[in-house]
Length: 461
Ligand code: SF4
Image (tube, rainbow, N blue to C red; front, side, top):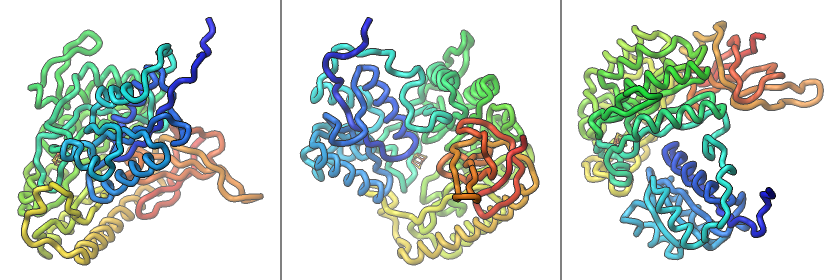
């Protein structure tokens, strides 16, 4: 039977902005569009309509999203907006800036986006469902994928408007999450990155309801999820990395499951824990979950249990009312906790965040100065820790292979990541003399050099 179409498929352009959670939404929309027989256009002028998935987290992201919508309207004219910015004022915020958009939805709204696409660009009549690969459409490289386990958040951190945009926590059924994980691994994914707003709260909303996986009952909660993903990771020789975990007592159980170094796959000795600050008063003003006074103890206990554990975190400096003494408290925490990977933001007031009403905003120059001091302090810690890796052997996952230099100096290098490095946010391991390696392959590397963030090494063959 011929599979050629008499009429070309309608073409949808797609712009995906924002965090990994938004990326997963984009993948779901794209997968559905392809399943219905739409084609995805690589440029505005080749598209019959454009979907823009927006971010509304900080002012810079809002500006980027509004610019992207404006550009899509100028270049194409038919634009549907989705994502976090679309939720603001029930879509009113976007419509006020760009009244010509065809439709606006909030995040996690695949069905609504598809309904709007159908209204403005009718569905093709002969979709070939088998045009969609079994793992769906991925926007990440083939060898790693984000696995979203829940949507929304039950906390009310005063600097954050995510709960007002995405709503309270809604956990995905555990059987569905594990089926997706298995599909991805079977399709060749070598690393799963578990994401949510609060991974440790998984299942709270459904009272840890019992689901089913491979014919066995399994509870919708972090410990059961980590156990099942660890088993799947080992079965397929793939890594599993946990993001956005809060230091609650039950996280200790996940630490016990972690492999020492990632060799052979399974749950990595890696935790992404957004601490945000260390001063009890500032944490209270931020309304952060988890008791600050216990955090250092917990970090130290985790390290005793799993000495190879990498802890990644993010912090905000210059939060309203932050004094010099409270900032010094934060620096002292950095010295004591010796975290491996750290990101730092100068506080930026987000429209609609409760923290904007707090007294004593910190002047921009002071915020910047604190951020620079914080990063310099952490860079020294990181450099010291990475130097200790020189001379050791680590397992890495290759992300890409490039040719560097020219003529006789021409060489093949690979960029890879160890168990300590999540994609996009952490460091890299540059592999010299990488001929024969390919993206998505694991390799064993002897580390020969280090700087404040990255490592270099040569493959052991
Ligand atoms: S935990 Fe706090 S910062 Fe994170 S999404 Fe929830 S409210 Fe926002």
